[in-house]
Length: 96
Image (tube, rainbow, N blue to C red; front, side):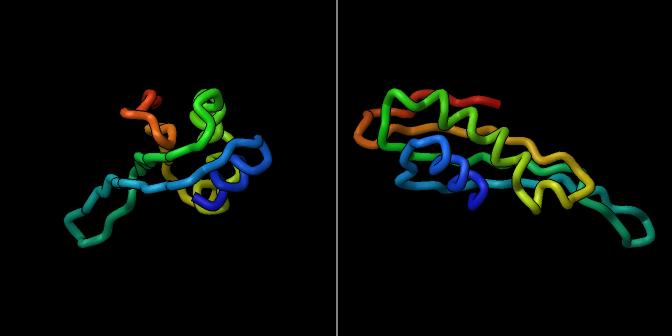
């Protein structure tokens, strides 16, 4: 989230809310060991500017590139964001 907020500021759109529903895959082995195999972030990002939805969606790739956690783990981190415009009746789209 912090990397995303940084990208939003540098790109010039306003995030007014950010909520994530993350999940992760885990492989367990017979000996009790295991490892995480992947993570999926499903953020719902509310922005102020209706004309910046594409920028808000694209910002997830740059945030993933900059994120010290995503860069440090040995599994892929995927994003499935939903972008909502403040005051709009419904979300304006999702991207994988």
